[in-house]
Image (cartoon, rainbow, N blue to C red; front, side):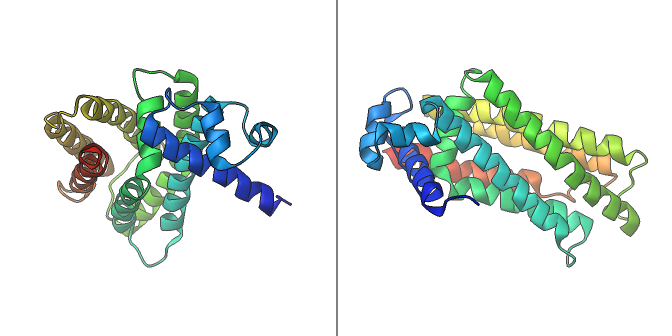
Length: 235
């Protein structure tokens, strides 16, 4: 069984690193800064993490696992139609981003900044693809049975849905990182339009009427919220 004390210490180190990365930047935060602020020994740090870069790996994978757990919980609900499940998972996943601003900041600047960490980025993409696809397939099957979705190729539709969704997340993250770096919110307009394009493609893929999904609306509100918290919060 996992040692509760060890798990607590690991989370303490992660939380400390997140705060320091968000406040000082990844490059400007030394390993010694993290060790001293967290109140652990160097040996205690290396018991949980191999390096400072390993912290970012853990942060990113933890966030992805949290997203996947959220979607899985929505899929299990018996009180929602398939369309309601899709829209609910859009709302909840975006809500998590605004509730975990420090994590989002670190991931944006250190993972999605000029493809600085392609291996980690690829691992996150594969984790999302492998675990998200069967969840989306379950929603598609439910929607087809309900007569809401018109999907003649459900397996292929689930694969396309997940690839499109994850690819867009990757591209949107890079664009939003540049927005934060330049402190110029103008590209938010085209970024919100991009989500509209993805929503349109998903609706066509699932045989839904235009405007059935809330992806663009929810993503636009999330982008505005993140901009307010991250960019304007530094002033």
